[in-house]
Length: 66
Image (cartoon, rainbow, N blue to C red; front, side, top):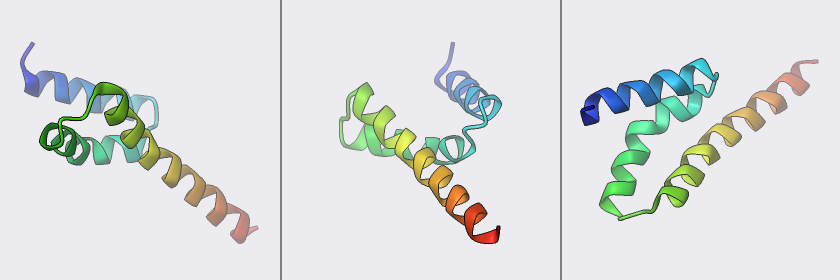
């Protein structure tokens, strides 16, 4: 499997799991992890932090609209 096909598969998995923000930030975080020699756990934590932030913002926005 090539890096490109793995990347596409990761984006697909994230989208199917409805982790849209994580899918959007995947290329940015992959670059950051490569440049800063991050381990897998640190990379995953940073990626999921984007998703958590987006989820919290949606919830806050939904509560304000009610």
